[in-house]
Length: 119
Image (cartoon, rainbow, N blue to C red; front, top):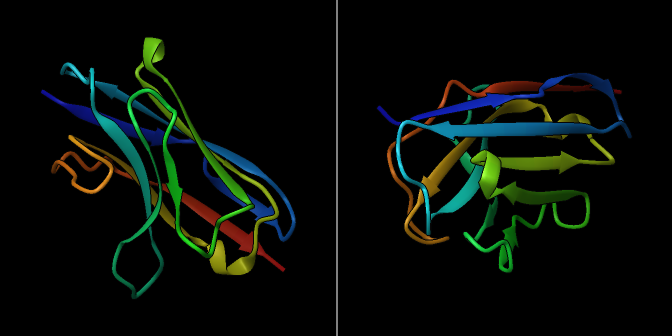
């Protein structure tokens, strides 16, 4: 069955960097968009970034624009989130997902990976 497995989270100080990875398996993902979402304690899951299948189109939330970069390697069925200049408010569990477009998503959420940023 379809699985999405996130990794790469950890604890860093403000201003530090992390690179998250999400590996997709169990299905054919040709033509799908991929995205990253996060959920802070006590909050709902929110959009962070998305990328088209070709990698040409990307989209970011205003809070991470200029600091985070989404990319993908279709040969490895993997999407990445490079996180630079991290802030304490970035602390959350980060999830990836796939969808038929950058505006709609399947119900294939992974387990998430924890990102903790201290000041």
